[in-house]
Length: 334
Ligand code: HPA
Ligand code: ZN
Image (cartoon, helix red, strand yellow):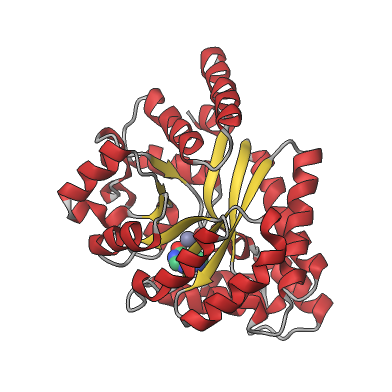
């Protein structure tokens, strides 16, 4: 099954580009930019990746971003991730970036987006990997900062498909960003949001109602509200689930307790994604394998995760049909 999963065509919909910063690149960039980091070796970095909840991860994640300064750094980061996509047979990826994690440190918005975008274009040309870019607001910052970030994004509208919401969920409700999301929608952006990762099922309902999101990032706490699960299944509202992330951040104790397979069997449009793979122990194939190892599944169920991701993606109907064909051809020959 490992070979089948490795070669299965995949679509990734929940990936923070800053969360792909591998310790080796962190050291290289720290040296190149002369930025001090509180680690003496790669082993020390890896030992620090021992999280007990979302916040303990976020503290380390934001600290890691300090080494990203120049356009070339954002290019190198993104290119390294796209090469990993190629290994895992990811055909299309929708990438989050956190501009405020950089502009707060004095790095220009344009530097960030231009570096990322250049790598995405190169991957489309040279690796055959298509992509979309999603700009996230940090929910621990205030509404004014989000409005300011949206303003900076307007001249790059052609490079950004949607806006999202990430960082500390508990204590930072969707309502705080209702107005900025309304403005983003007016400007033509689609909307998504992290909800129901550490926060309750009611956060999912609130994000759907107030932020008009078309898919939910994580959303696994929906299981606390059976009526919500039925609505998600009936309306095919997608969840971008990140199995290894959920274990690392103790959303579930063990993969055997993860609800992704049970949601799949209830008809919810669940997808498998890697979130912050450099921090959580694996990229796409690793996430598929972790779910497969803990839950017995039919081959058709494993394939359904990719079909769901195609359905949930922001590509055109024509592209969706083409990708479904790629998956069907693979399955019929495998
Ligand atoms: N949750 C919230 N914010 C994040 C995450 C996450 O899993 N990864 C990066 N920022
Ligand atoms: Zn995330």
